[in-house]
Image 1 (cartoon, helix red, strand yellow):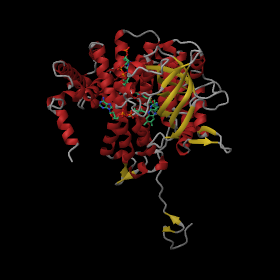
Image 2: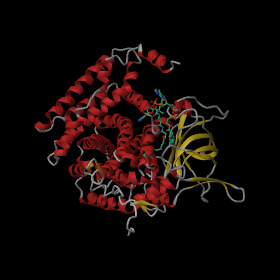
Image 3: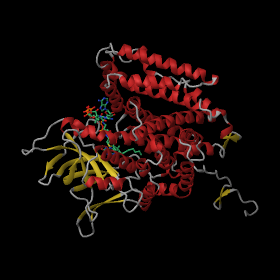
Image 4: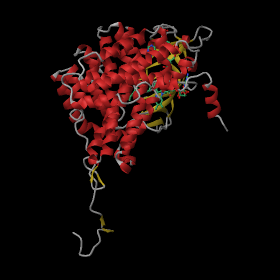
Length: 581
Ligand code: UCC
Ligand code: FAD
């Protein structure tokens, strides 16, 4: 109690008002779209109950571990106290708990057990989507683990990798392994065909020894890795370019838990993803097994890229959802200008725009998960396979960018508190920034989309048009007719653009590729939102989200082409502008 006359602000008192913090509730129960999506496509009580229970565990247990991972980053111990080289990466106890939990909860296993048939991937990814923002970035090793399992399974190779596959997909924490994915070298991470210098020297027993330098290796505390190298012939010569690359499997540690044939040069000092070690590795005779035919390394690791890019997209949408869940709760607790934030229409407009982005991203990512699930269970038509190939990079590049924009807006919705480190919010933005860089940058994936269209002689695009139109053909409620018109008009604009582009000089489509990727994403998302809102169990909010999405420019490539963005004169003008001194 204050003595009479004592000021409220004095050495003994720091004021009476303390802002209530935003509260994280069960992320499954707080996500209407996730629940609706599952009710529609996977109405399994077992799945619903698992996600609900897991949601509780995340709030009461795991989210705290995630924070612990952030504030206890990994360290590299190069020498032991007697001067012996040990190269040990020490992670926090919370990181270890994440590994055990991942096994127990089946976060990789569910995708391979396939208890729910073609919907098993959707189930697995929904669980990972809930886990991701609380995971202290353990979703990164899980993504690579899942990708490695997929590669091993699809190659059907035998030998020590059989055992590795069982470990990667195990639910037993004692037995469970994680994998790395070492592709990037100092000369280049996008153009691995030119950038890879690592050499694989054949041994008498059919194995190889790898020597080279891997410039970025994330979650380097992993048990095994998949990596690329060039097989040397008897004279030590290798084949240059992508055609010289083969895919290898290597165990990272020996029976005693010591790295074998590897020197950990240092850990990267990163903007974000600090919870997780990312190391530079000197490979100095690392024992390895070749998994692919010689020269088929890139084609064989492509399955891993598909899976890790899907995980990347999932993390992006999960980050958006988490910041929104916190922001909407905060809007019910924080007052400004005499009323709660939730009662300021402009604040709610801001949150609505974030919500629409997040819903659209969610449906796009689930669509890719649906497609991979069909492919893996033998249900995929050629159309499904084409869509999976096209939409994987589309989703990765689009959601990676959306995540940064939405999470940044999310931070602002907390005012100054959004900038304060120990709220946990700034880390979300830092971590989001990597999503458009690793696993293929936005430009590199835009070009990948062009290549995949060209390789299919345009069939991939035909299937894109066919399927998008079929999503609009269902029984559409009149309240959605404006949205349907927008998507249809964007689709026909896109068709006209592509016909025109086919007649343009080489280089035209390259300049247009990024806008083309955005157009493919926005149109497809529009169709998915309309389709979801047309489902009999949909809510009014579903309809509203579809309508709002379709108000945006769904086909930026058409407008940019109209103003001459991709003309042949543009590249030299771009250079002159950027380099003007
Ligand atoms: O960043 C990394 C790990 C980060 C941590 C994990 C995060 C996971 C998410 C976590 C969330 C929290 S690992 C490094 C990732 N690096 C990249 O993504 C590389 C980016 N660069 C590319 O994607 C390039 O496009 C390359 C490397 C694929 C280009 O190489 P090439 O050799 O020039 O490629 P080509 O000629 O286009 O393709 C060679 C073969 C072809 O098959 P064939 O020979 O049968 O015609 C292609 O069809 O590979 C096939 N191919 C693909 N197939 C290439 N890309 C793909 C693809 N995406 N899908 C299917
Ligand atoms: P570059 O290839 O040099 O690209 C530089 C810029 O040029 C980019 O903006 C790119 O979009 C642009 N560009 C390149 N080519 C073209 C083109 N043809 N047209 C237009 N623009 C182009 N790699 C791994 O292998 N394993 C890992 O575990 C791993 N972990 C990582 C962790 C972190 C935190 C980070 C940041 C990176 C990690 N990476 C990892 C590396 C990552 O995959 C690469 O950084 C990424 O693929 C880009 O390669 P780069 O850095 O060589 O950039």
